[in-house]
Image (tube, rainbow, N blue to C red; front, side, top):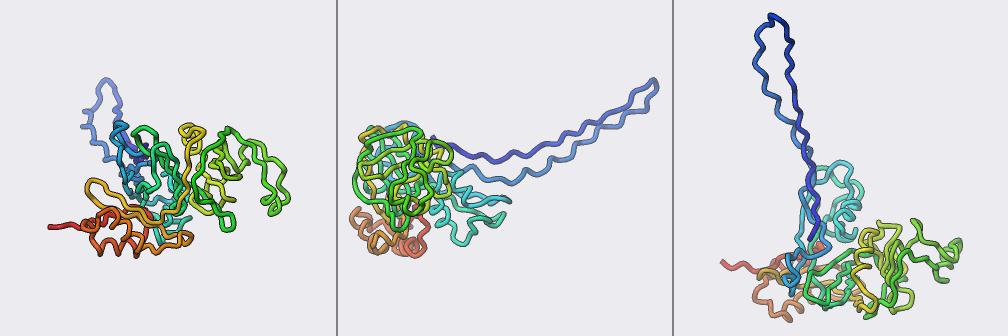
Amino acid sequence: MPMRIHPRPGAWLLLAVLGAGCAQAPPRPEPKEPPPPPAAVAGPPPCPIVQVAACDTPGECTGVEVIGDVCYRTVLPGDSLIEMARQYDLGFNEIEAANPGQDAFVPKAGSTVTLPTSWIVPRAAAPGRVVVNLSEMRLFHFPKTPGPAMTFPVGIGTEGWATPVGTFKVIQKQVNPPWYPPASIRREEPDLPAMVPPGPDNPLGTHALRLSKGSILIHGTDTPFGVGRRASHGCLRLYPEDIPVLFERVPVGTEVRIVREPVKVGVRAGRVFVEIHPDEDARVDLASEARKLIVKRGLSGSVDPAKLAGAIADPRGFPVDVTEDRS
């Protein structure tokens, strides 16, 4: 079940009234009412850290298309979007897209930040499969038996080192893997050693899953701020706290589908949602793609054209309700 971050409780101040005693003491005054406690320190509302869909029983998640809910919290002094992203298991790309105009390093104290802790399941989803959607920089894992999907943000390949699209398999798993920089990287950074041993400076982190595609790995990282960014040489990076969870759940032989789905459509409780991620590498027109998917699902009669146009014009990277409300 999702974990929650709870508000900080306020502190109560208790005052004791002491009286002096003697043989003939004056009458003791009536005890004074203690002053009211100070107001509680403002803190974030309880927002979920979503890694797994909230299902009470495994079968309950069968057919779930929209995971989690968008949440909101107040910016406290000293907060940053980068730290919030990691706290709520979001990639930097996700929290930045959801909060246009906010300074990533010094967001305005007292303002409200949108936490996009909700996602539409990619079309490539299948039981027992790992799906990585490069357009949103997020990984999903779906169990073979009916049950909740698990999802994590990822860092992907930078320009010139694009993470490949295709279908692969996990062929090896390693705990505390050493890193052998390939010749192509050593040409860029000639001071690199031939091997970087396990430890805090190892860019592979604590766990790695090798794919059946050259040197492509799903691994941890020693630079968490690269999650939700184009920052790798083609590999997929997870937060240090996320990779052990995925590592334990995914066996050797698991199919890994890496896709680009800049537009996703899903239905929950009879409501239609769209999720849009601008992605130049996908080379699709977002409006045309959204309409095509809606028509393909037979949902045209349930969608409000104005709501859909608004979601396309101002994409925030989380599911938006575009259902037509009929009176």
